[in-house]
Image 1 (cartoon, rainbow, N blue to C red):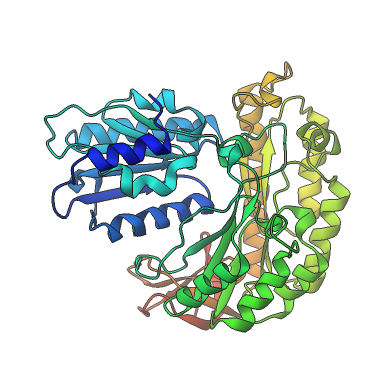
Image 2: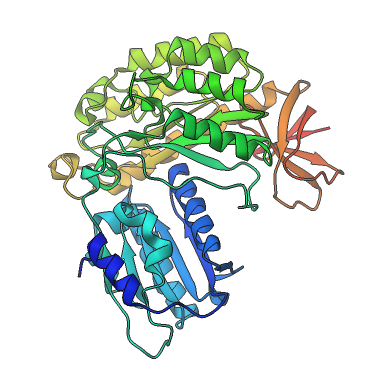
Length: 454
């Protein structure tokens, strides 16, 4: 049963408050925007008096904030729901996020699920959980809160507050939704149209976060489109300049941005301002023009290469990453080889490689030219090996150089784990340094997937 916002308010007025100091556990799946959504949910729950539980087994309420970008993401969520109910059958389970928005009917009847809350109703979670009866013997199962996400015209995500203290590098979501219509992607239908947080709101949020955190990550579903829906249509580079000028933030890192949104102005700012992390992530998907056309991507391989080479000229020691898809419908051996060679020729320092997964109601899912799973696995293996080679070569090129790092909350018996501004994991052995500190270290050697520094 789907419940409207009006009905939800009525149920809340008629409902009972939960018992004192209920405990919640939240697990976030997927992208940085989802992580930021999860942090906002946590703050809302804490403001209502709920207390974080260390494990699902200790919680009265378990929240699963889902992703639906692939079939594997859907299966991960379903398995997590079943496991949570099996381990803690008395807990109420709330499923939210992109999977909840896309297919609430698939989730509502899973064991233990009390609420399914789509992205359209995420802001109401702290209110909705108070609708359920306090006595666990009273059946309360299967409430769906999902509305038309496409009708949302304003940026509605709640802010991250600095009272959420379990992060070293908080994600601040400043943009949501996407106006692109890539043939493989379901995200616009579960996140809605592109919507931006007002610049003044972002400045205030970064100002508050900078009082506690040294590095802040700005995230969004299509972050490079920030501002296009606002009055005067400001650009992301102008927002970053305001943040660097008007707040005390030590370092800003920007998450994934579409290749053609990496303008010269933005690249110059990242390359030359000491408050910006030297890190460029631009989704590639494929290096084959044939496949890019089939995907309805808004660039061709030569356009992508020009942007990445420009970035490399400005900052050759930066981290350069991409998302790459293998096995898109119709991808021939020649298409794959073109993509592999394209990647080999460019200065990537890491890749996120994944296999194409049909998503319901997308154009690509209806294609009759699906690539066999075994072929996708082999192509994925080849690109992952290439990525590993490039990553190791990049780490080795940093040996002997001074690198700027932020210390992380990742306990390590041998020392302190850090993340460099150019997105390399760094271990400083023999020293246990508090998290959330920016320091300079000299890279000494490569060890596994990390740099060892002193």
